[in-house]
Structures are given as C-alpha cells and as structure tokens.
Length: 289
Image 1 (cartoon, rainbow, N blue to C red):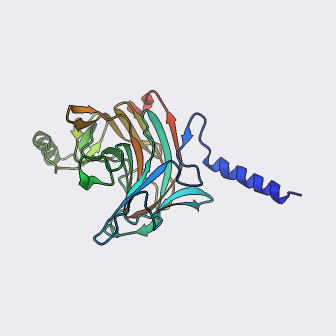
Image 2 (image 1 turned 45 degrees about the horizontal axis):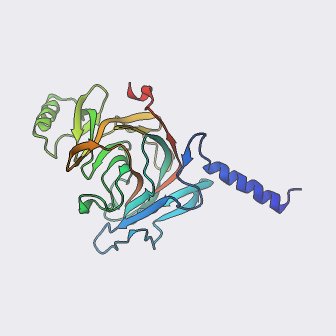
Image 3 (image 1 turned 90 degrees about the vertical axis):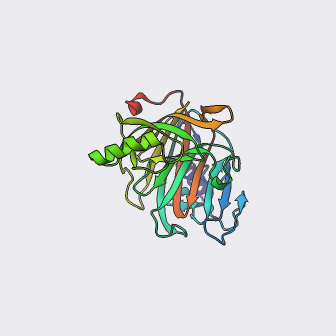
C-alpha cells in the first residue's frame, strides 16, 4: 500500500519533471514562483494606476495550473511585463504560450497582443520615457495572425530580407519609393528569403506566414540570438531572420547583442510555460539557408 509520504514524494517528483530543463539548458521558470523576474506595470487607459517596478497589487502576474501543469499567467490588465533580472546573450530560448479569454481596454475588441522582448535595457533605462515600460529591445511579436513579427522598440535596428505584402506593380513601386524616402508609413513588408534587404528602426517586418495555432492551443516559440543575428521560429516554421541587430548611441550605431528578456502584458490574457534557455555559439545553418 502506498503511504501518504510516498504519495507526496511521487507527486513532487512529477511536478519537478514538468518544469525540468532539457540537458544543457536552464529554466527561466521554476514552476513555483516568479523568482528571477521583475514586474513592470503602467496604466493602459486614463485613470489606471501606474504601479511601476515590482508593485503588482492586482496580481496581473501569477503562477497557476493550466492543463495539468504550472504556467505563468498574465491577466493582461495594464501594460508592462515580466523582465528577467539577468542579461543574456548567445542563446536558444524556447517557450510555449497560449491565449486566455480575458481582454481589457483600450484593446478589448482588438486582436490579442503580447510579445517576447529580448536584448532589453534595464527597466526605465530607455532613452524615450514614453516607451516605458518597454525598454529599447528587439521584439518577437506575439499577436493573433502575426506571431513571429519583428518590431523595433525604442529605436532598436535590424535588417531583414523583405517583400511588400502582395506583388502588384503598384505595390512594388510603392515599396521602392518608400525605401528611398525612408518614411515611417508605407506598405506592409513581409519577411521572405531572397527579398530586398531593408532596415527598420521605427516599425516592423511581418512574419513569413501565419504559423500560430487556433486560440486556446499551445504554441512553441524558438528564439535563436547569437551576436548581432537572430531568428524567430513559430511552431517549427521560420518566421523572420534578422541581421545587424544594433542601436544608436552618442558614439554612433553599435551592436545590440545581449540584454534582459521580457514577456509583455498588453490588454490580453496569456499563459507561458516551459521557458528554457540554452547557450549556443552559432545559429543552426538550416535556419539561415
């Protein structure tokens, strides 16, 4: 007969197995609490409180059990994120996410939106106060039908091979004119290997396709970031390949190759689990070819 003590030990072992990192990697989520992360919150709508750093009285960020295992649950109320207390560079980061049902103003009827920000400056260190609480970083966007998109946060710069959405002569002409003018607004650009190389320091490149699963299902995100290059992978499909990750400083443009990692809250409930990071020396060639 199994004793109570034995049963407790077995259950504890099973719980540990659900959060154990793969060999050679570290887990950024221990399955019990938010150790290793800071919370950052600001108002999303007029009248909302600005809680700032490590004040979360309304429990926007919690640890919960979903689908039989531990998750980081983000309610989506207010804007901000969980940001690692440590900086990381040269790694493969893998995590899983799925959307919840809650949505909040000012995006209560918009598509669900969150994000994985990497190579972040420390909270509040952004050169543009209005970008708080999302410091200068490269964003692996997590948005319905657009997951994997690159977004420049606070002027971070990246290059990618892109093509206009659509392929009509008018769209091609608009794209070429927009590149020459370097204006903020223009046709949407989608990542495509072999497309025209372009840089963004205020905007985004759409992913190669809509690789996200249906709402309510788990999605696997892989981020490869080595030196000044990165690759966004969604459910095994390459969404974006970025090169020349950099930022503007008083000394000119310099590489942006390491920093903190942030999981956003942006008006939509979302769950994260199995957040594992492994040091790597090079991005696998099959992702770049």
